[in-house]
Each structure stands twice: as C-alpha cells, then as structure tokens.
Length: 276
Ligand code: KIV
Ligand code: NA
Image (cartoon, rainbow, N blue to C red; front, side, top):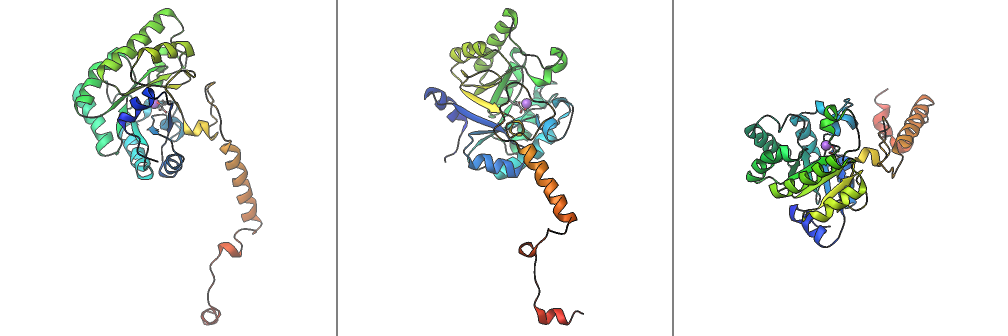
C-alpha cells in the first residue's frame, strides 16, 4: 500500500478508478480500515451521533473533532485523513474559520478538512485553501442544515433544488475543493454533477455514478442501530456479535468458567509455600 494524498483524488477520477472512503473515530478501527486499504478516512461529525450519542451533529465541537482526529491519525499509515468542520466552526467569520481548520490540521493531524454548503461558503473555502489546507466540499442532504430542511429529506428532487445543487458543485470546484461529497440526492442528479466536474464526487446515498463512495463505518459494520438510512449497506452485523459475546462473557463469569488456566498467571510452588 502507498500513501493516498490530496492529488490521488483527481488521479483516481482520471483513471476511472473509484475512490473508497469510510468514517473513523478511534485508533483501533482506523488501524484496521487503513490496513484493509481504505483510501480516505473521514473523522466525520457523525461521531456526535454514533460515538457520543448526541441527537444530531449540531452539538459536535472543534475540540471533539480534534480529539478523535488525533486517535485516528495514530492508527493510520496510508489513508488521507479528513476532519469535519463542525456546525458554527466556519459560519462566523474568516478568521475563526481559518483558525478552526488550522487546529484540525495542526493539533488533530488531519490532512484536510470538510465543510458543508454551496455558494454561501465559497469565501470560507477560499480562505482555508489560501492557508494551504485542502478542503473537501459537501452538498445535498447536509446534516448540519436539518433545521432548515425540516428533517432528513432527500434533496434535489425539484428542478429548483437540483439546479441549485449543480450550481453549488460548480462553484465549489471553482473555489478550489479537491473533492465533493454528494449526500442524499437522486442518482441521476449525482451523475450530471459527476460528469460536469473535473474533481471527483464521493457519494453517500447518491447512487453508483459518483467517483467514489463513503459510508459511516458504524453503519456499514452494523453496530449503530438507532436508525438505518436506505443508503446504508450492512457488510457485517457487529451489533449481534457484540451482544452475543457480552452475554457469553457474563454467563462464563457468573459460572466461573472464565478465567480458565490459559488466561491465568502462575507462581512457583516454593514461593507459594512461604506465603501461607
Ligand atoms: O459526518 C459524516 O460522517 C459525513 C459523511 C456521512 C459524509 O459527513
Ligand atoms: Na459530517
């Protein structure tokens, strides 16, 4: 395996090779998905929901992202690490935006940042890239906007919405993002955007025509069950594995079947005699 860098994204699109991305929040999991060959690990603000148990992503802070980025960075050798910019970390002004993005790189050890939005965030994207920080865009069903959308609703079904999303994608490319996440939009709209752009699109709930795919690891492994969006494919059922393993552990401890000899340390008999 070799390192996946910011330029690898465009190279993959040119070669017609799909880009693979998963979320990661901790050292152990990052190490495993990196070893498996994942190309990009996103320390997403989805961590608020799947790791911290918040109601939405809106409660996540820059410190939360940095804390988890650090853990992921320690476990990652080859993947490109993207840190999500949380709600309010890029909305106030340019100075705070650069500072927050910079902290995710400098303290969190991420290689780039991702932020949600279209034309309305173009000035922030330009400022961050001017600070030499690669930016990934994110449009469509952007979870930080649920209060404006009125819930988790597929975006871009009407002509007006679809045209706005296409325009947003074009403006983001012009602003200098190296890739764009398309979330929760019709497959054919994602195809149009993918064809129009030179930079790659990474889809989640956006169909097969995107240049890459991303899923939330905890969804993909079947260990987050509060709700499962239509676009999630479960490649494992770790929830059942965790529950049945825990039940077995409980029953073996209760019955004294665990720990047995193989998990136990011994002491020399002569030493032992002197202890009675
Ligand atoms: O936070 C996240 O996990 C994301 C992906 C779903 C793209 O932004
Ligand atoms: Na996110």
